[in-house]
Amino acid sequence: MKLSKSIEELIEALRCLPGVGPKSAQRMTLHLLERDRGGAANLAEALQSALDRVGRCAACRNFTELEFCELCADPRRDQGLLCVVEAPADVMALEQSASFQGVYYVLMGHLSPIDGVGPEEIGLDKLEARFRTEDIHEVILATNPTVEGEATAFYVAQRAESAGIKVTRIAHGVPLGGELEYLDASTLAHALTGRTAVSGGES
Image (cartoon, rainbow, N blue to C red; front, side, top):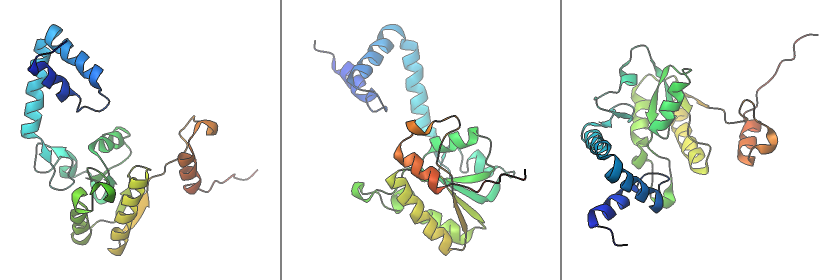
């Protein structure tokens, strides 16, 4: 069946979303046109508004409509405790834990020379400048436990340590309630590497 050009273009546009293949994109397109044109109009308006208004924080590079995002501008946050993450979604996850009261630096990616992604492409030059000009007492590395994430963390750690800043790495290990036999080798390796001392107390 030959579809109209506008329908084909919408199907192809929806395929830019993660996890959306040709069939899913086609199903979404037909649903919006057939059953929810109002929802489609709202979606188009909200998407255009976000594209027009949302930029990056001048300090942490996270998404915001302001010059400085709400977290960086919050005087209650510890400005000297800097957590380095790969993506805005990581900030959202850490904030939901309600266990961190510092500020963030969002790389918007990780080092990947094979893909042409170097330090400047993910803002590491600006991060190094912050190491030299701001009173940062600790950098927490919270990049993903992948080859690229580890390489990025190593790069940041070297620069932070050369500036005399304490560097720590979040633990990656066995989740609460998890069983060892179902964990992958990488997770177990991180769990062993990040092991801590346990006191048995006195009997």
